[in-house]
Amino acid sequence: MLDAALGGSVRAAGRLLSLAEGPRRAEVLAAVAAVTDAGVSAPRVVGVTGPPGAGKSTTVAALVGPYRARGLRVAVLAVDPSSPFSGGALLGDRIRMAEHAADPGVLIRSLAARGHVGGLAAAVPAAVGVLAALGYDLVLVETVGVGQSEIEVAAVADPVVVVVAPGAGDAVQAAKAGLLEVADLLVVNKADRAGAEQTARDLRAETGGQVLSLVASRGEGVPDLVEAIEAHRRADTEERRAARARAQLLSLAQSRLQEHPELARLAGEVADGRRDLDDAIGLLLGGLDGQVTTGNGPGIPARTRRPASRPR
Image (cartoon, rainbow, N blue to C red; front, side, top):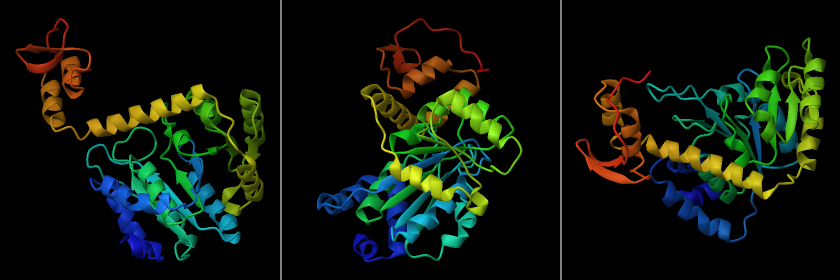
């Protein structure tokens, strides 16, 4: 499968990425390690994030063209939100990027977040590793619509492009969410709308950083954005690197906890009021803060039990 993907088979590349999303992830990474160890250059990874509806997918689609014009192979990893009940996702980014779907130099891959909380799917770092082995020059990572803490993209991408739209309080919400702290480049999309100039001024005053205007649907401002991406190299501190790594570790740990074999049983007991919420958390974490054996079984943190109550 890897040989076929290295030979240019998009289907084989897609199958490798599918395996990287599942339980055979380690096997896939071991297979591609031999290729990357042979001196394959790491691709540039550009993150695109921002509030829902700001035009992230349109911006990503607009960026593909200029890089393809340079002869670069481009991959798009578009993370769509999953239903917390069914686990399904629409995975509609390939529809929005249909103009590039027939280009053999472009690979567009939709990934379901599957409950992962960092704005990315848990398989994204592995997928980037696969794409590096397959010789892609640029990987564009589009996150789900961000919320209060979904800033994990900064751990895997440089630069991070934060896209906002004028009006609807997007700029203010981005500032409240702490999203501006991980923004390397700020883009006001839909700049032909009323209030765009004011939004750009507000963002410049808030961050002191570079703010670009864009009408992604018409390609206006895209050359300036490409130039800014190419010129950017993150000047990082050790503290910022550690903070990003910590956020990524915590986010991936939560994804692993969702696969815990006792999760469904413990959730049922908490919902029925038969188990205290903190006790259930202690069992999931394996009693990391000390274990005692009580009437509820081993692994419960050593503390005084409270009467079981339904979660609010």
